[in-house]
Image 1 (cartoon, helix red, strand yellow):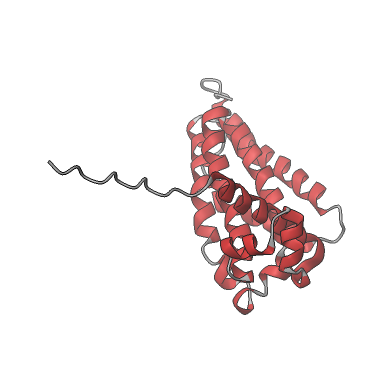
Image 2: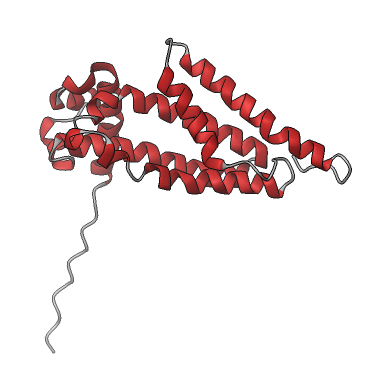
Length: 206
């Protein structure tokens, strides 16, 4: 009886290759934020402490690097909403996520010049972002409404628009402090009416 040749093990991405990819994304975020669109791929590779050949294996073009950084930032916000829903009370979860959104706006501004080189402008890269971020903030706000700690007429996307507006003005380097203050003001406004509505009934679930 003829024995069958041993099957070849399926190839899996090497763990160190994935680590290098993540290091490159983190390094690119920092390098582009510091040096703008003129940052070179050599600078990104050096910051990540990998070879330029490794960089191009993961990201064949400059646009691929920029897209990967931006998508990672958006993915992190979506994942954070899921985590906060499980770990935090409703209103606290909204607050923590909005503060993360402020950090996202800060990173996005730092890389804006580099992102504007992608396909001649930011529209193609940014076009799907509002739809992707609408779901997590809607889930968080809806949960707060159902818990009785947020007024039901709050429009979730208006929260993001308010913070994006603060980020777009940037009259000083201290804009982030203003954005954080805006988060607190938004939460007061969201919860004030809910507290009033609950005054005659059961205490809200905080």
